[in-house]
View 1 (cartoon, rainbow, N blue to C red):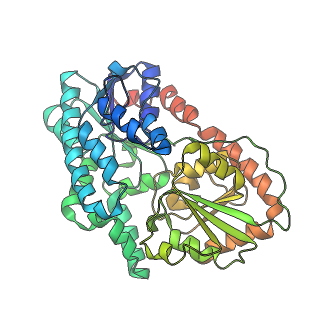
View 2: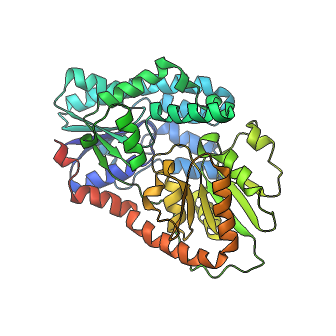
View 3: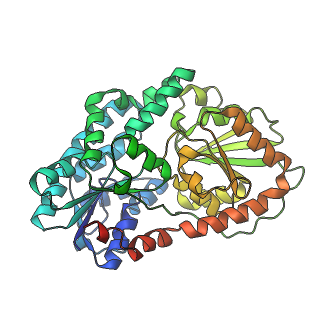
Length: 416
């Protein structure tokens, strides 16, 4: 088979490209910003960046691929996106540039596929619409497969509207304004309708696709793996030791952060503490009003080597999200020996057995979250065993297992 994998960013697309290279099915990997010979713009950027950002820039390379197998389109636009996304006040400009780049990128990928007689193109949600529309009209024989990294946006909007009616939640609107503009949302529905098959990371994502008109038989569940793991052996938690809860990811309303803050503040700060690791916006009211609270710490974004150390110093992971795909951080936490409290909507609920390696709670329920946090405070002797159970579960969800499974069962080959 001749398969093109195309993503204007990165996410886990390198993993799929590597798997297809090993199986002999990769035609090209296509992206915007990539560190290869002759990529002068990225070379210049690396010289100007500070240490942590330089590490991130150097990750824009897949050692499994030859440079000849990688095509880059719309590189300058990709750099502009990476710059703008760091400044929340420029969000409207970022959305405009992102949509413009996505359209141009997708059409160029479609033309590449036609020119090289590809059998299949794999694109990613919210970036597939122009490519799949072009292929449907010009080359319908090329199979269109969408790898879905998060729940379909129309389904997410339903969840958000329910939360907005419940609590106001102005930050949900502020951070996702495009969801209430039909012009922006229409392509995200059209790309679903133009897709032949879907790779979905969790049952929650599958539910969202069916809500938007996809058929169950079009959807193949392919879970993600962990980027961070640790084999340290965790000992008992002392009776006088504070339980360290951890959240990793964007510290935004969609992740259920207001409920996590409300929950931890119901427990004495000498008994429990919650660390948020990830980017945050100080102007969000739930951050601004609690930034100095003794129950909480905010580390900002960190590199993966620092992240592993944070996992290792923590006891329990919390992920109270309203909408995800399959939150990688949940798998990483389990791979580092942490029990987990999560929602079904996090996608990680596929891995959780209540009381064995964690607990599943409803989204938007601070009392339910607090009860489970308090349970760990009161049953700290259970934390090491549940963490070991979680690590055992996560060991079957590594990237090697996930995408070896994908190749072994020839999921993509069977779609042609």
